[in-house]
Length: 275
Image (cartoon, rainbow, N blue to C red; front, top):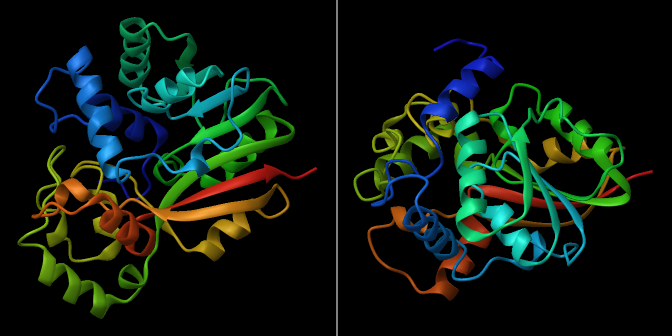
C-alpha cells in the first residue's frame, strides 16, 4: 500500500468495489439490488432518514450529489422533485447510478467527476450533498472549497465525514474496545470481516470501507470547523452511523437512534455558504 495514495488508486478501488458489493443477495445493477440496498440503508437510519439531509431540498431545488456511489441520494432527491446532478470518481458508480435512473424512471444528469475539481460552473447549485466521500480523497480541504465554488449565494451543503471518536484517539481505549467487540461485531463485504483486528486506529478507519481501500480519514469536530471557516456557516450537525447490520442482536429503532446519536461513526454537517 502506497504511503500517499493517488486519485487513480482511489478510483481503481471504488471501480472494483462498488458500494454494497459483497453484501447483497442480488446482482449489482438489478432492481432487486437497489431495492435491497435502500431497505438496508433505511434500516441503518433507524427506520427514517433524519431531516438534516433534506432541510433545504424541495421541488425545483438544483441539487448536486458528489460521490453518488450507486445512486441512493439521487433517488431520494428525485422523489422530492429536485433537479438533480450527480458525479463520481468511479466509472462503475456512474454506470450504476445511470442504470438506477433508467430502472426507476428518474431524471438526473450523472457524470464522471472528481470532488477536488468538480466539472461544474461557479454558483450553479442551490444545494450540495456529499455523504461519506471527502474523507476518501487526498485533499479534503479542496473538496470543501469546490462545494463552496459551485454553490449559489446562500446555497447550502450537507456533507459527512468519519468522526475521530475518543476511542480512536486513545490507543489504550482503542485496544480495549476492539478486543472486547471483535468476536461479535462483523461487517460483511469488501474484505471487512477482520477489520477489528487492526492494530492501529488509522488502519481501522481505512479498513472500514474494504481491506484494499487506499485511504480513509477521521476528523475531530474542530478539524472540520477549521476547514469550513470562512467558507461556510454551520447551521446544524448530528452524529450518525452506528452500523446496525454488524451487531449480533436486533435492536429497536428508537434504541438504535439513541445509540447512533451518541456513538455513531460519522458526523453530518449542514452549512450555509458564507459570502
